Image 1 (cartoon, rainbow, N blue to C red):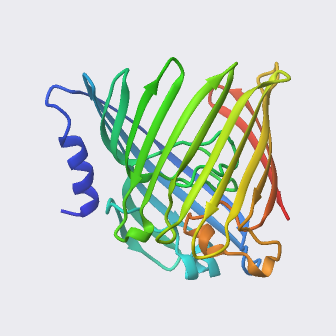
Image 2: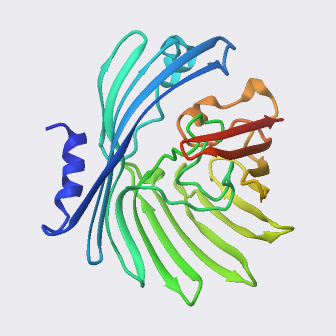
Image 3: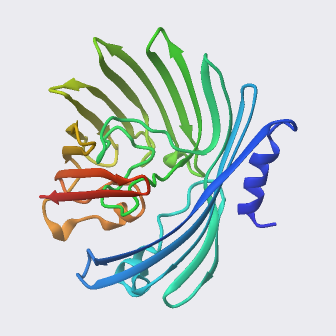
Length: 324
């Protein structure tokens, strides 16, 4: 049996026999036209995906699986990016993805987008498996989200890559939380072990996060975030300090503002600084971007998004991002 299917069946078989299982999912097909960031050549890519979602719960037990079949085709498979970095970021630690076939201008694969089991009660949450550990308050950039770096230029803005990890969360007081996550890998250098504490004061949320991060034997980070109501909108920000051991320490920071209009439209504006980014385009590290280790290549960014639901089945969304 393929490791991909076996891993998903293990998650589902862990559910108690009488557990209620809910099934859902979607079919999606989208086309994109872009230019290579390396040589400027134009390319197109069509992606079709079928996702099956299964949720099981019984008392405090929870299990969740998002299982994908995906076919992609287009001239992207002839680009410099594809020859250097492949179609998708490197696979996560657990072997739950598989390429079924490839051609000159196409590829077909299947795998688990999410697959975790856990326990959940009013006291806290424990989860094991491929999951999204959503830290930070930014909408475009999250300096403190070192486990799931998100590329804001991604066409599918609702798709957030998960991490294979053990995660725990416990309530502290009325509104506080304490979190701990361990993301193992084959090599100790690539392990991550982080803790986060969150609290609320006078309507403002704040959090501190720190711990060991992947990259080198003694890599470490410390940071925090905030969010609260301001001028009929929401202000948010994040700051993180990184000590990678293999190079000089650096900061990442982001600040932004969200505003919802009476018409139902929403606007987000953000500024982002990456101390390890480059100001010279010739030194951009596209390998780190394609590998999912970094959300960008430059040092300074500004971005904005505008969204509005035009109909129950139709949504307008526009994004603009500039770097320096």
